Image 1 (cartoon, rainbow, N blue to C red):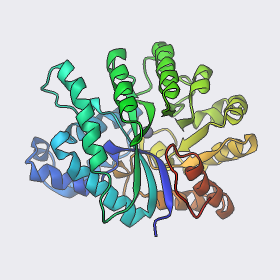
Image 2 (image 1 turned 30 degrees about the vertical axis):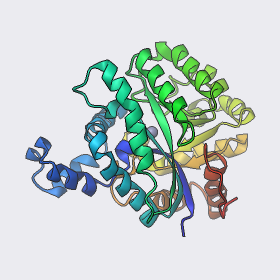
Image 3 (image 1 turned 45 degrees about the vertical axis):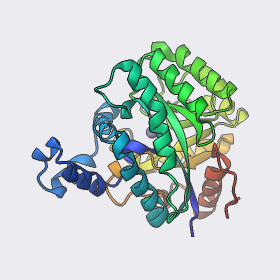
Image 4 (image 1 turned 135 degrees about the vertical axis):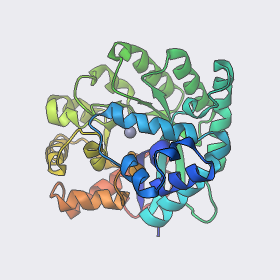
Length: 330
Ligand SMILES: [Zn+2]
């Protein structure tokens, strides 16, 4: 029986490395020159990185593989795995549609192709044999010019329903553009989309409180309770949920030990800020990385107890952008 909800998972990091490797073989991809066997590929693909930037580089490789013609292959497999091995009832999958367009096209044609990307993904996230509910979040990117991010907003607005929200992703750079991104979030919200934003993942510097008025959730945000707990009051008042992805912080070099998350969970609980535990890029983590696995690691490292776990599992459904069904946790 499907049970859980995951609110933060990237399409580029959702797939098991074996699926990616089989795909590379099928298409005779040149990267196989470096990785003649699966073990070598696996170790490279799932190795911990020193920085978020380094982590994002491998992500870009997968994004390019997920082109229009190959998206059905990846979508089916990720639904199948999430339903079968993780007991997911509900999943919010996020991706940047622009990065999946054909790089050989002109910029204008790439923007136009984004509609098709979303359409194909929507059609292929409902496999009859694996009845998981999957909703989409479209990602803006900090590396992209405003014009492209605005075009992504338009695609999200045009596909409201299957697309339930927008996110700001990419390396934590270009903070001088903060106002531009906050305005995009506000426009998204005004058109009925929900909003989340990668903030406070590697440090506190990009957490500008002006974001809070436009956000429903924050992707990560762990450096708010760690470094600026005074901001938690505002998050609680606005009922902004943090999406916390434990294994990610070890993979991107942000935390050394799971026990460091104790402060995050304790301070949020005291301040009345909800946390949803999520997986981020489970395919990039050493196997098996699943949502139930993340729950177990938090218990195992004494970050939370079983009673708190139940609350957190319920929180994922309460904070979901597009869940309208019933869950045993609500
Ligand atoms: Zn993320």
